[in-house]
Amino acid sequence: MSQSMQRKPEWLKLRFSVDAQFSTVRQLLARKGLHTVCRSAKCPNLQECWSRGTATFLLLGNVCTRSCRFCAVGKDSRPGNPDAKEPQKIAEAIGEMALRHVVLTSVNRDDLPDGGAGHWVDTLQSIRMHNPGVTVECLIPDFLGNEAALDLVLTAAPDVLNHNIETVPRLYPKVRPEADYSTSLRLLRRAADRFGLIAKSGMMVGMGETGDEVLRSLQDLREHGCDIVTIGQYLQPTAEHLQVERYVTPDEFKQYEERAIAMGFRHVLSGPFVRSSYHAEEAPRLKHLSLSAKQP
Image 1: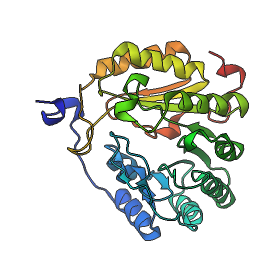
Image 2: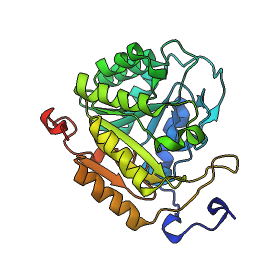
Image 3: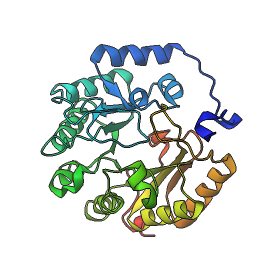
Image 4: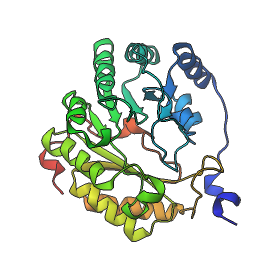
């Protein structure tokens, strides 16, 4: 029997409770018709984050043009037109939630000429216009390697530029068949070296990778200018998705954290329930990492 069908270990059992803040966030998002990756990707931290009044906004709809086998977001090669009012609605929601740090992400929109980059820029500009002083982390797709599209977002200078490699290169054909490991690394290097941005990335483990492969990918990230990394356990969202190969222990996550810090990462979150935007507001000195500190 696969581990995905077995009882989860104790460290992966969550106890949910709904408080007034959670209900407020849910009602606000519903009222404005906004999507979050928290709900679309079935994040295990949804209850905790919404109860803290935070959410990761999902741009460009909640249907993706790619078919990554780990992801719970819906798939369709023609997902429909973006909502032109979404940037303003997100900016208004941020104001109502009184957020000081915001995380944006999006589905892949390979059907659009610029991959949705222009929509990203519109959203960033709207947030800054309506919420001066708010810092913004952008967890972006790879825009099919289109540097002109990527540069639109990088030029807008988000406070943190996040792009997840998700897994080790050997598993890309199985886990991310329409993505390319080298393209993701080049994206991060471009953000860090050419635009001087704080680069962040994330991985999931438990999909069949080895410990040595994880460490090699962490080293790849560091060598490409990545300052912040997150590492979490892959959890199978439905029976149709990729099965869990192994539940990584808390001690192993701690070892990954220690090794990543030794490699020179400035901030590391590593644990069973860690996801890319988990406690993103805790990333230290978001605006004060110097270019010299980015050298391995």
